[in-house]
View (cartoon, one colour):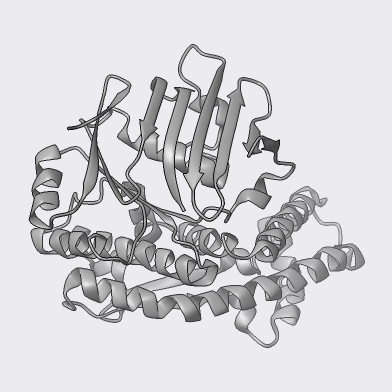
Length: 367
């Protein structure tokens, strides 16, 4: 499946935009701040029903306007017309082939998508939450039950944390009351853990292969899954942690504490990796996500690459472009603030692509 046409009305810095895309490679060119990333975010909206950059829908409406619309026409085995309507102080409206969605989550995975952006280095540099989000985003596009379990777990966790926070100081805990939450959280934790464990087992070989391709096998890297839930006596540990939970006013055991350990030469990548190595690892993670989604769903995901060439040396850039030029990917969108660089790469590898110049809130096809 590929995005044939995108129409924007009052979305971010675009008053109006009407763009027809190449089924294969699309280069979005323009100065920093011109709106290249906003164009990719509109595509992300159509697949994930939300922005990748700003979770407040009304803040994605163009300044001084009260409503916005994103419309995409997708071609594939089944053509899809996807529309998202945003309005200040009102719930967004999402339609597929003119039928309004009752649950936004039901749409996720219909059109698999992988976004690679500069902010992705947070997966390596920041805390475990960013790495869990990456795993959750991957699995949720192929497993509806996992997404339901995750949403239910987060709801129950929020309720238990509220109970911990508001429990009267010095009052003995009502263990029967906490046991209700504990049973639900433990049950969901184990289900989510098993799915994550299976995902890592399937995903890891892709990750190792893609990093070797990008780095020309110059470094040894690995990815490991760490979870409290893997312990055989997890339920007992969860129950025993109640006194600590009351003291800290939060739940200290569960899959919300899971982490993915990213290593280079058996050391943490965030400790010893250069900017280029860290960015190479992020790109390898996202390309492996693409490979995983493609093989599980049987669909070719859309691949969005935002400003990926910065901080990569020439060898890694050429390795990456060579991969893009293979038949491993479907429709690809690449943004670049240096049109000359993209043009040289396209010519060198004889890549058929459409190039668009973004300037002044307008998108123009380059001839």
